[in-house]
Length: 302
Length: 81
Image (cartoon, chains in turn cyan, orange):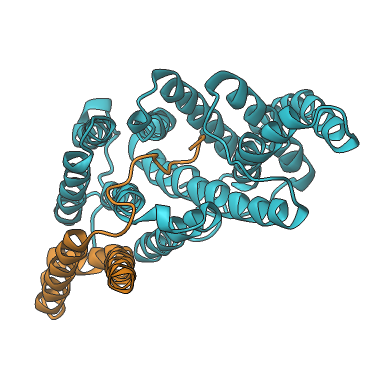
C-alpha cells in the first residue's frame, strides 16, 4: 500500500490505539496467568486479526508497520502456547518457536522495506559491544538470585553446554532482540519518538505477566528498558543479543552448576567471569553513552 | 522460563486435535482470503493480502505439529491395546 506519512508532530495521545493494543496484550497475558489459559490465547488470536485489518486502514505507513510488527508478538505467544512443547526436548523447544517467529520478522521487514542497518544488524565498535555483552553473565546471576527460576536438571557435559549456548544465543538472544530492539523499536521510534523506549519496554514486561510474578514483570521492564537504551545508543543489536543469550545461559546452566560444584577450577573460573564482567560492562555502557552524547554513533533511524 | 518469552503454560502436552482442526479451518480461511484479495486493485486489500504472509508459516507449523503429535499419540495408544 502506498501510504502517506503524516508530517505533523506526534503527540502522545495521537496514537492512543497503539497503547490500547499494549493494554490488550497485557490483558491477554493476565488471562493466561489464570487457571484456564484458553481465553488468553483466544484474545491473542483476536488481537492478531484486529491488527491485520487495522494496519490496512492507517494512512501513516510507520504506524501501519508498527502494527505489523505487533502481529509477531501475538504469533510468538500463539505458537508458544499451542504447540505441544512437552513432547520435545527442552533444547528443541526454542528453535521450534523462534524459527517461525524469525520467518515472520523477516516478512515484516521485507514488506516494510527495512534495511539490515535499520534493524540495527551491524557491528560498530566490536570491542565495546562485546564488553557490554559480558554483563549478561552478571545479569543472569542477579536474575537467578532474585527470581529463583525453574532450572534444567541436566548433568554438565561440554557438548550439551555448547549446544545450549548456541541455541540460547540465537533463539532467546538474537530473535527476541531482533523483534524488540530491532523491529519494534525502529517503528515505534518513527511513530512515538521519545516514548518509543517506554512503549517497547512496557510491551516486553507485559509478556511476562503470564508468569504470575510481579517481581519478574518489574525485572523484565528493567531489562527491556536497559536493552532498548543500549540498542539505541550503540545502534547495534550485537551487545544486547549476546547479553540476553549469556544471561539465559547463566540462569539455566552456569548458576545451577555453581551451586552443585563450588570448588573445582571451572566453577572458580565461572565465578571470576561473573564478577569481572560486571564492572567491565558498566564501564562499557558508560563509554557507549559518552559516544552517543558526543554524536559518534551513526544513527540509521530516519 | 527466565527472561525469555516462552511461558510455562501450554494448552496441551500431547497435541490437541481440536487445536489442529481450528488451525486447519483458519488456514483455509487465510488461503481463501489471499485468493480473493490477490487481484484486487484496492491498496488496503493488497495490504491485507501481504500481511497474511506473516501468519502463514507459524499457522502451518501449529497445525502440523499438533496433528502429527496427536496422530502419533493415537498410534501409540493402539499399539498399547
